[in-house]
Image (cartoon, rainbow, N blue to C red; front, side, top):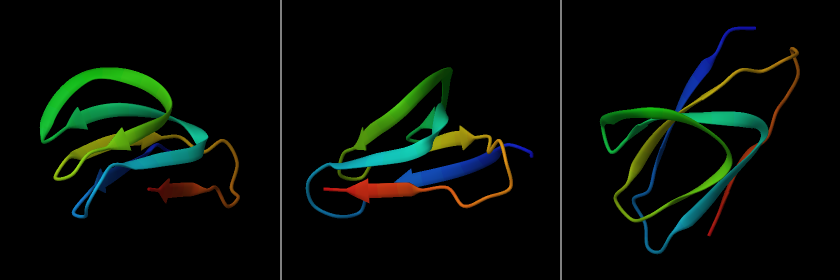
Length: 68
C-alpha cells in the first residue's frame, strides 16, 4: 500500500496530542519542510500545522486520534 500524507492543524484552545497505531514520519512543520523524523505521537500547539506520512501495511482500518 502506498504512503499517505496527513496534515494536522490546530485552530482551538490549548495543545492536543495526536496518536496513531501506525508509525508516522513528520515531513513538514508550519509549512516548512523538515528533516524527516519517525514518531508515534505528537503535540500540536494553537495555530500549528504538521504534515506526517504514514504507510499502512495491510488493507484494513487504522486509528488516528486526537485528544486534548
